Length: 515
Image (cartoon, rainbow, N blue to C red; front, side, top):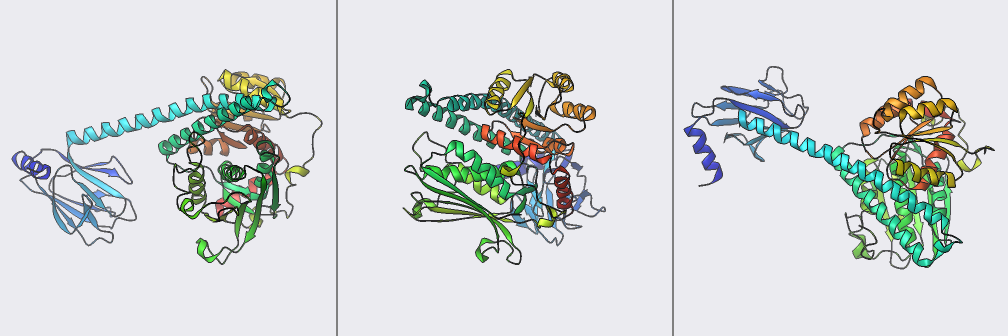
């Protein structure tokens, strides 16, 4: 006997006394409705089961319960159809456990009260697993961040010392690669758990290229000549850190394609998008171009290059997630990516994004100075580094001092408030999750006492909602642990430059929100 037949026979023999129609997917998930005789499903307030979703008709479907305990599902001429266990129906018989979908997003299930309770328990279990996964990823990110910082410190010390031995340098490169791969895996876990988009703001692509070029000077061999061509006032609506990750991925892949040296060119411009890109051709778009003179890519590899976990690198050299991540992040920014390449003739990656009107970027007609033209101070930038993880604090404190910053360390929010009050710092780097006084609470109290304090956050959690909150309260930047030391240094310089045109940036955010 089939499962469906068995269910039908069981329900006929013993009609349940309490039956619920429960929303299991879509808006109002978890909401329950008792089914006594006849129930209508729709967007209308007159419906027995009211579902506030644009894809649901005002009176979408009807469910009728018979004395025998069976249920009849009837579509009421809906626009988007009624589906029973995935099949579109006009009139059909349903049983307990069946799933009824109305419109494209809303799924309900018929169940006795005890089954509904079990579903709630299962849902709670999944939420618990999600929280556990996020917590594990957070703790791993802190460990990986400390490992990465220590490795970076040794790499920078290696020149002219016994650490300059090629075997030692190769070992350090492998350690750095391993921590980067671990970080990418934890970011993947957090993306699955959170399932939310990151904060968006106006991003100057020209400034981004200058920042990445500075990073590349420390990570690319001198046999590769790096060129930049930056058109002024090319601004997109996006996430600075994510776009930085995209550009770094492409540049490092270009580096790997030129083992004997070559030329890497990174350019930014405003162009009319090609018709086959899929962006509006009646307005200019921003194009970010990465060109190399490397080995090129054969047609077979081109067809797979953006697939998750595909790689042409030797075993152990990478998981092949870089270009897949690039493609996904570009799509999240409303952009498109193209590739021109041939074996032995190098590659050209072009990233097209909708461009913001420059008037939303600079209302005064004056643009902030380019990063390399900003005035330099005679004294080092003073940083208050706040993190409850001693190993991480010590590792990044050591690295920041090596880069010329003056660093004071604090183990928590209360200590940070005391230290900042004793000697005001140029910048505070706050951990988000700390025992006792959280990063958010520390930020609020610090800004209450010192409204002009510059604050940026670094966290092992990737929670867009918390990022939104701390940014709305004045945070200048938000970094996801673990991060490259070059990214941290670049972000610090970015935040320090913000002080010169902070009011302008504030206007940007307001204009962008109105658009």
